Length: 173
Image (spheres, rainbow, N blue to C red):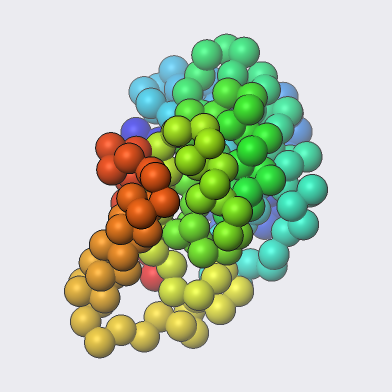
């Protein structure tokens, strides 16, 4: 069970609610104590139509909460499509990377995943948050998403990622 913690001003469900470190950590502890196995922390909204966030802003949003939760031994998943954010997170206690771009946004991401030998959640999304609602055209949605994810597994394995570290998410597209 993943508890979702959006440290963003514009996420569709809770944008702005957890920008302060105190609020974000308290919410994460609440979710963990209620049965969440991981707290999935994200610093960039990926709702349809969302604007891209500067990677430095993303890092500044998520790192204080990650550091505090890691000190409390709360398992953390980091929702990011940026290799720099992945690197900071994995070096300070993140257990899982959740890449909504399916490792397509930042070509350096696969190397970070390989370096830290941690699980990667690969999500299917047509396009990016800005245009995903316009790019969701499929011949057969089930088969097209399946093929996309199958190709991602092959890409990861071809790049030295163990199959046991690959988690697939069909996404909302």
